[in-house]
Length: 183
Image (cartoon, rainbow, N blue to C red; front, top):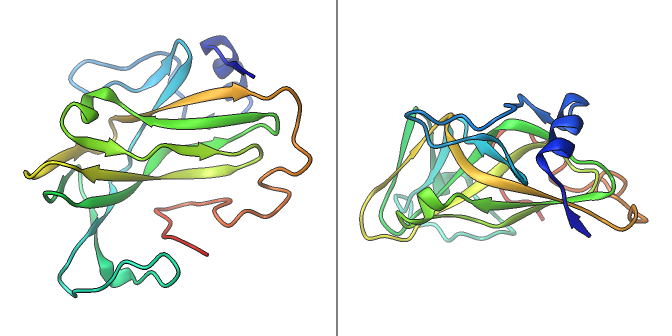
């Protein structure tokens, strides 16, 4: 298994693996996003689902209730102290059948106590990635929409798997918005 370079990511993105695709790192006054040496830094969209305790519900992955969160469409999302937010990438991904992708949080946010869950994108998966953010601090924390939040690392397998995520009709296939837990 090898880590794939910017040349491979660029080539595959011209074939539709990442859309929209930025061919180089975009910086300036933004938290960086776009193509890097051995990965792609994706952006977070402006739709956020912020967990709330207003209804004193129990968070249950087998019986998840939409009343556990508040949905906001904003350019800046404030995560309450010691809380959690769901969002999605701006970019849509279409993963080749012989590649596994790992999503890792960016250090700019990690250094502020904002952790992005490590998430795999399996061979054959496609859609917008639902991202999970934890604010580990005792203070409110801010995430900026349309800026970089996570790096995706592409790993080439030694061969195609017998059954891809698409072949088994994976439950998170084809996500278009922030997708809640499914069993």
